[in-house]
Image (tube, rainbow, N blue to C red):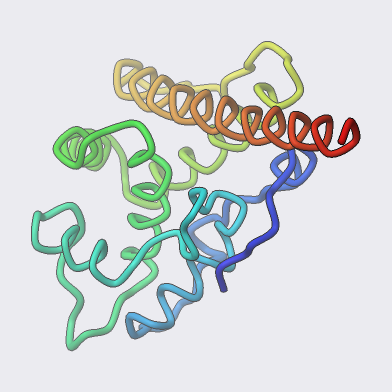
Length: 183
């Protein structure tokens, strides 16, 4: 899908992270996985890149145990959820850190709950950060507050990086416009 359009703060504010039950409930081949990721995450494609993730990246995540291997070259909604989380966290964290964080979350919570919480928290952080408002973290009412705080901070640091990058893109655009108008 690769979008050449630069995403704006307004675009980011409209972002919806697909919840587990919204992900395709059928097995997908690699090209279909890439299409689904690009469809949902095109706003976050890195400058100079055409995709959120490549086949090589996904194969490396499998090789290094970040995600489990596909069965008969088919990926499930569980793979998609992992890849969505990894696509954000890789902006800030190493693969080893992501692997440890995901393993810790999986021993703390059922998969769907952990993933949907990630989506809720990501949207909250994006909304607050891109509107310069205080972050109102999604409430956590369970016993493992350390796991909750850890993922909140991981998401916040990732969103902070996205904010700075998108803001710098805007700064660069304004500088170029200023130079062009004064020529």
